[in-house]
Structures are given as C-alpha cells and as structure tokens.
Image 1 (cartoon, helix red, strand yellow):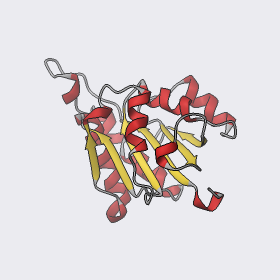
Image 2 (cartoon, rainbow, N blue to C red):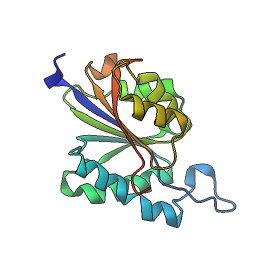
Image 3 (cartoon, rainbow, N blue to C red):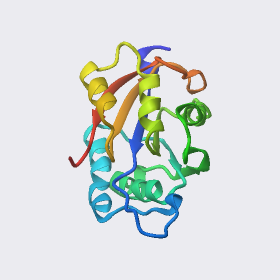
Image 4 (tube, helix red, strand yellow):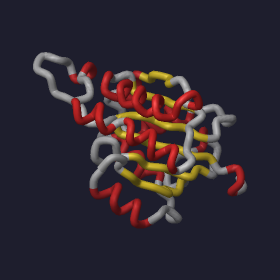
Length: 174
C-alpha cells in the first residue's frame, strides 16, 4: 500500500464518567466535567483535518454520550455511530477484531471505548516509525478523552501488531 493509500485510525477514550450509586457500570453517564470536556475532542479532530468516515462506539452510556458531543462538533460530516457491545469489557484482541471488520472502502475510522483495552491496543499497534514523544506520553498515561491517531498502511483486515504509526496523542481540553 502506498503512502497515498494510507488510512487513519482514531482511538478515543470516553470523557470523564460519573459513578452514581446503584447504577450498573454499563449505564454510567458522563459526569458534568465529561459533558464539558467531550466537545473538545471534536474540535481537536476538526483542527487537525480528521473527520472520520465511520465510527464504532461501545454501547455503554458514557461512550455513546461522548460520541454525541464529538459528532455535534463534526457537524453534518459526522458518521452515524455503529454501537458495538463487544467493545464494552473488551480486551485489545477483541477490540482489534472489531477494527479488522472495517470495510476497506473506509479511509478513516474512529473507535470510542474504554480503558484498559484502548491503551493496550494502542501499544500493540504502534510501529517503529511512530512519533516517539506521542508514544511515550500515551504509554505513560491515557486519561479520559485521550485520543490516539494512527496512520494505517495495511488493509483493515490485516492490521495486527506493530503495523500502524502513532502520529498524534492528545488529551483535548486539558
């Protein structure tokens, strides 16, 4: 695959979530701080010229709410999210399997999910030509609304490990 054929993968951790008493983890909403910070991820994507063509979002409430804020900022170009239950309580291998199912016609994909698999998947995918500063910062700590951007030069179905270059790591609104 030539550099002109490269695709973009964005891994986004949900914004700050609340811990209301008696609420199942899957149904935890964003905290007021999360609602305030989540739009910044959409702003960051726009500022960097990244508008995903497809979005796969964990079906947990906090990830869905995060995506709503991001999509609002992206406007009419925001894709409709595909909610995938497999991303809730996934591990890196399961999350990667979801990414591997992406149609090859999709040039840019965002996946909104959870720790620890988001950080583990990022670590698994990072190739040697990744931005070293971004890689070190992401490996050290992936806070809420942590955003990883990868250049993918292989077909989605073949993405496996050490074959995507981390180009950016950011925590929008921080």
